Amino acid sequence: MEQQEKVYVIRHLSYWYTDEYYQPLIDVSYHAGHITDLFEDKDQAIQRWKQLEYEFSHQVKFENILYCPYQHDYEGQENVLAKKSIDELFEIIQNLESCVYALYEYPKTLKQQVFFDTTQNRYDTYLMNTEYDIKSNDCITANFIKNDPLLTQIQPIIDDVYEHKITLQGSLEELSESPILLKALIENDSDFEFTQYSLTVKFNAISKINPLLKQPITKELRYLTLKEIYQLEQPLNQTDPTPFSSEEEYHDY
Image 1: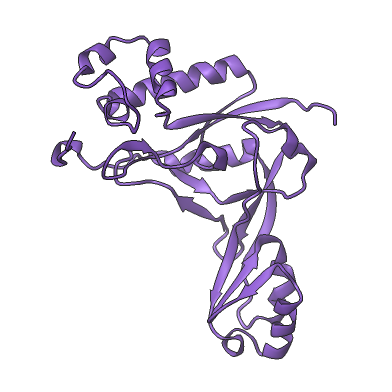
Image 2: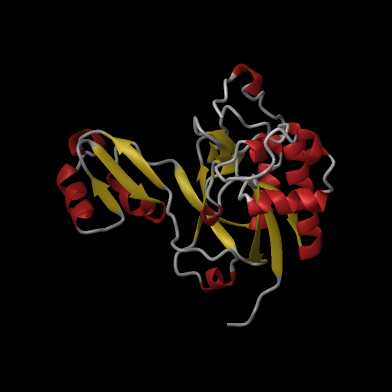
């Protein structure tokens, strides 16, 4: 397949405390977290990534390094870390796998599936913040499109395409005026799963099930580029949260 023009995306991975260590919340391989920056030039993207990690480390007083899961020689060396250059600090953070941002490479024309709520006239979002985050992480709910040939040009490589789903609560009789037809559809279509008063519907199957529901799902699938998702996420993340104060917490190290 012909190589496509690329965009370089930085995502916020969020930050949390496990009761033992500080570390990123989201695994890099998930391609999740809101898009903080988008570039068409890779070198510019890398420099911005380094700057974000540098600023974050200083803001959290190097907790991401001092209390990370991996052994290091920086205990009590906050003053030493504070004097490191952007490149020096970035190398330390990468070696300790303590990055709270990640850089991704996508084909410029790649699109993702998103939910649009037609009653509220808005895209579905989900919040990835923890109580330790100093940066907002509100994301548009988006899926890669299964079997999209452009997925082979994504870096890091995607192991599997995660599919967001909708869950409806109730018995078949409560959900539908035609429970027998609904049951037949569920049993013969892998896009649906029903267990103990819970019906799970995949993104792409809404139109198939809506005619049988008393209250149709008021969401539709739309397809957006990474740039369009980036533009939608920017206003969602204008206000940063007030993080939990590490000074209130006792570290047993």
